[in-house]
Length: 291
Image (cartoon, rainbow, N blue to C red):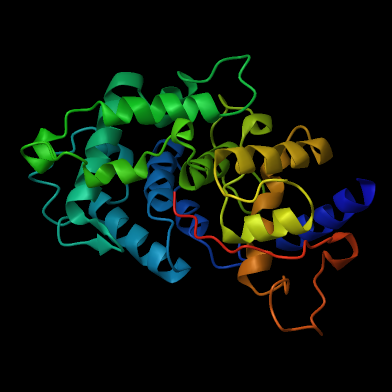
């Protein structure tokens, strides 16, 4: 364990800087006010699937419609008046109508709770081991909001629901966990700003790179991606850092994105920074994680 912690701490230090890697969190850091930052962070994490450049472009396009004070505009967001600039936008399979619905839901939470932080904290109990119950509660309440002002006649499965996955369905809730990481942690990468949710209760945002590295480092026994795998990888990291287990996420993810991990490739000459503590299994299954 001590060798693994030392290796991961060195990797964390190497990436713990604002410009260490191109990432959507760089858009989030542009907003100094926490009330604005949480709105932008939710938008950026909601569309965090696909190529990073595409995620940044879509986030910027949506935020351009919100102006310099997103929270102030959201308090009186009108789907007809403010949605005109959003409806032509598309990000992968999500549409402009879905983005309008997303902002409509966020407006409802802010009207009821005053902030997204308070809305999430309302679903987190003192005895909860992690943020799973908070995500479940938040997404259940989001799915109960009347969407007729956006879609007209309520569709059977509104596209906006893709932005609100639930652990109870087995989803890894990658984008929700990414949002919570950005708003709860504070270091060279994550801007933070929230105080109601302990970093110790965060769950790692599970993507292809975290799955690969997590299995190589024997942080999980699971093969199929989902909430159980994300929780188990986090539990393993919590043994290394009980207070801030998810601090390793950014460096592990970008290690994979930058080609630092050669497991499953033909590059036998490659030397990963984690090679001394890596124990790859015979087969690495690559799976696409989008939620």
